[in-house]
Amino acid sequence: MNVTICTIGELLVEFLAKEANQGFSRPGEFWGPYPSGAPAIFADQVARLGFGSVLFSCVGNDAFGEMNIVRLARDGVNVNGISVLSKATTGSAFVSYRSQAQRDFIFNMPNSACGLLTADHIDETLLNSCNHFHIMGSSLFSFRMVDAMRKAIENVKSRGGTVSFDPNIRKEMLNIPEMSQAFEYILDYTDIFLPSDGELDYFGLNAGHHEQKLIDKLLRRGVGQVVVKRGVRGASYYSEKEEHHAAGYPVTVVDPTGAGDCFGATFVSLFLAGYAPQDALKWANASGSLAISQRGPMEGTSTIADIESFLRKQGILPTSSQLRTQG
Image (tube, rainbow, N blue to C red; front, top):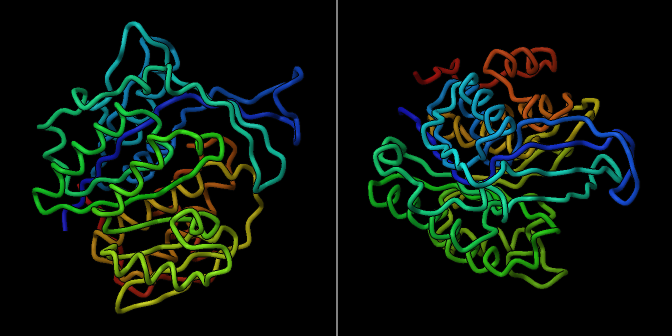
């Protein structure tokens, strides 16, 4: 199958606190700027795997915007869906680490260029080239973005395409009503749902219910595949007919930002290309492991050769035939 995946949402630069528990209330040193934004990381990973990748977003007419476009284009993303706005600045995020798993963010998105993205910025011809649409919950921070997301979903679905959804919930965004309202709409169209295990409770059962009950509820709702990300513990795949679990790989954590985006991009791309879900899980776990091994949200995206080399070093090889990347 020829795979071309489009996604939509925030495109920004990110600054990483150099010290643990550095916080934002006192002076400190930061690494950066790095190209970032969950949809941008996802799109970059799809492209580096050799599949068609289109990103719809907006940046300012500034050095940060230029840096993002140059980086994505270099890695093979179709950047024709990125609009450069002359009267807005490129979005930004500052990240402070409490631990390897806990992070605090300060975002400048709603008032930045990517926050001004509307449905009018979605070029129909470019959208028509895509047979799959991926959406991140972190992108649903304005009614404008929600309208653009609806346009993309309706277009792709009307042509027989598929949709994947990563809730990617940020605690800093839980008070945004647009996000929670949009989640229910998206789930009605979702073919592949990619929550972390910590996000499952958000989707509808009281505390204390078993995870499997919620997964069964999602499958009955019409979600075709549920892929649960479990961090260092690996990942799980559920459908009406199959269930698979894949262990994580022991690696040194340098920077966890972007690992889930790389995992999702790898699983979705390979699954759409026809790979067995258990193999797609293994490759996606490897992709996430490579991502956390590099500092910077987009610096750990990987090629097919990178992932295959990693799996060989782990003594794990996929059971499917060798990957055939898409031109």
